[in-house]
Image (cartoon, rainbow, N blue to C red; front, side, top):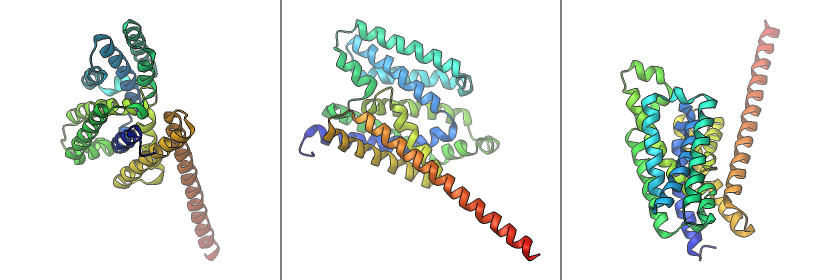
Length: 281
């Protein structure tokens, strides 16, 4: 399997994207902006289609559209985009633009398929370097702002009371998120970027409430899920994105079941202690 260049490219690029998504996903869940991550992916599809129409590198269109949207959302405030109707309208508009630009483009349909569903097994060496650059850049930015971002994400009231520049933090995070979406789109596609960006982090939240452990678990789950998806996809010749999505779903529901089981055991133990004390008295 690893004697093929395309599998080497897939594992290297996919691993870095999974690590990036595992880390930033914890903050996406904590800040309640998973809907914006999904919206960025659809906007990115329109950007990539526009770039193909213009004869540019698709990544340039992705970055142009997503970062511009991040600045616009940051100025208006994320609360404006918490309404389901607003999100549905925006996604519909940009999906329509994406299809329009694709129909006007001279590129073939396989390019549209790779944008929508990812092309991890067919990325070129140049794309690997692009993904590595984006992923490492996002991780460095998150590391630089780790303390303030963590404080603002998990205790927004306290962060504002402490005098932190919460608006600047919010806009900066949206910009970082938009760049992360660009990297993830090239692996799992615009329609499935939600999988790597939120599911491992949501699973990790069921396993621990400590930020450091949540990040560690999220990264491990994202990487393991991607590796398994690549291996199964290679041997079955079926879409890798499907297996990545299915594996992450299994992880999530398993963690949810484990959390519910722990809570039942804890509740039962508390009731037993209360009954014992009552009987003794």
